[in-house]
Image (cartoon, rainbow, N blue to C red):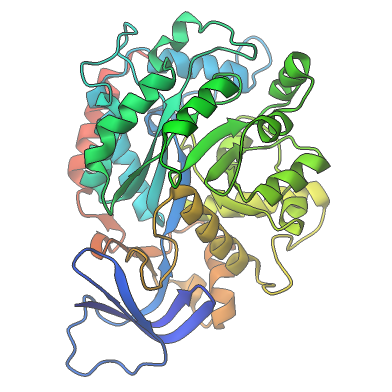
Length: 458
C-alpha cells in the first residue's frame, strides 16, 4: 500500500491536520486518516509534506491552440474581437497534422501539471485531415491527444465535438471549417473507437460545439446513443453577437433555447455562458449543470464577465478551464475569476458562502467539485474512492511563511506570481518533482520542432 503523510491536507470538509493518505496499485485512494502521528518505520512514498491539496481539474481545453499563444496580439485594420481572433485560429488549424497535435498537447499537459492541474477535459474538434477527409481511423486525432496525456501523465476526459454548421439555422460550413466537420454518426463512431482506451485515467464523453454548430435534433440523437453517465459539454452564450443571432433565429436566448429543447442535467457543462439574464441564471443553476468558466481566455477574447455572484446565490456549480491556453495556471484562472467580479461590482471578497468566508478556500474547493462533476471521473478530493491526484505546495516559499492555516489558499491564489506548486502526483505516480516535469526536456524539444514546422502561420 502506498502512503503519503501531510501535516496539513485539504479535505472535502476543509483543512485536516496530520493526515495519512493511502492508495492502491491502481492509484485509487482507499483510506484517509486525520490526527495521525507520523508512522514509525512505515513506508511513505515521500518525506513528510507540509501542505497537500487535491489537484485541480481543467474542464475546458482546446490543446492545439497552445501553439497560438501570444501570436494573435497584433491589431488588425478593423476593430478586433472574438470573431477576428477566430479567423486567425482557423488559418492556424488549416495545416496542423496529427503528429503536431500530439506534440502540442504533450507540451500543454506538462505545463498544466506543473501549475496544479491533474485532469483535463479536452473539447476536441480538429477531426479531419487538411483536405477535409476523415482519417482512416476516425478517432486518429483524439487518440493522439490521449497519447499525449498518457505521456505527460495527466488524467483526461476526451470530448469529441459535434460540428456540422457555421451558424444558427443550419447554415453550411465555410471552407475553413471543413477540418472540424462531424455529424451525429461521426461523433458516435469516434466515441465507439475510443472505447478501448477508457480506463482509470481516461473517460470519453461528447461535446456539441454550440447551438450555432449543432442542431437540437443532432444533440438529442447523440444523447440517445450515449451512456447516461457520460459528460456532455457545450459552448454557449459566449459573445453578445451570438446571443443576438440566437434571438434573431429562434426568438430565444441560447441558454433559454437549450434548456427548453434539451434535458440539461448534472452531466452537462455549459462553457462560458457569459451573457445571461436572470431567468437563465436561475434555470441553469437548478438544472445541476456546471458553469465552465475560462477567465483568462474570456478576458483575452473580450467575451465579458459571467454573473458569478448571482449564480452562486442560486446554488450554481462552477469549474475552471484554460480554453485557448494563454495561461496554464489554475491560480491565474481563479484570480481572474474573483478580480473580474470585484471590478464589475466594485467590491471585494465576492466568491464566498455563508459557510466559507475565505475566498481562496471557496474558489479552490468549488472549482474542484464542479471540475470533478464535469469530468465524469472520480477526482477532485482526497477521499476514498477518488484518484490519488495531489499537489504539494512549496512550504519554504516566503509567501507561505508564518501563515495561519486558513490563510494558505488565500496566499496561494492571490499573492505574487511565483509558482508555489512544488510536486504533483497523478494516480499515485509523481509526474512533477521540484517544479520539473519528469519528461519536460523531451516534450519541449518535440514541441519546439513542431513550432518550427508550423512557422508559416502568421
